[in-house]
Length: 85
Image 1 (cartoon, helix red, strand yellow):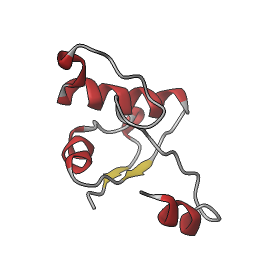
Image 2 (image 1 turned 30 degrees about the vertical axis):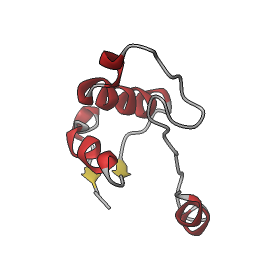
Image 3 (image 1 turned 45 degrees about the vertical axis):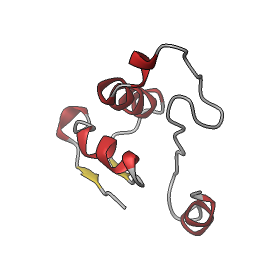
């Protein structure tokens, strides 16, 4: 879904494509409670932490834009912008 944007931006930016639980290569838990808004935001933050991201511009489409809005600012007061597409 994001391949065109990834290709266009990859020469200038470090990009991370996140698959929400149950989508593409991510785990697919059987328990519907494992797909909550809060857990998804936590997963997104964990990916940024694991990649040592200090500043981020985050985009999301459809329900992803709702999750993007909930991602907290990066630690140490670094600039953080959430963009909902």
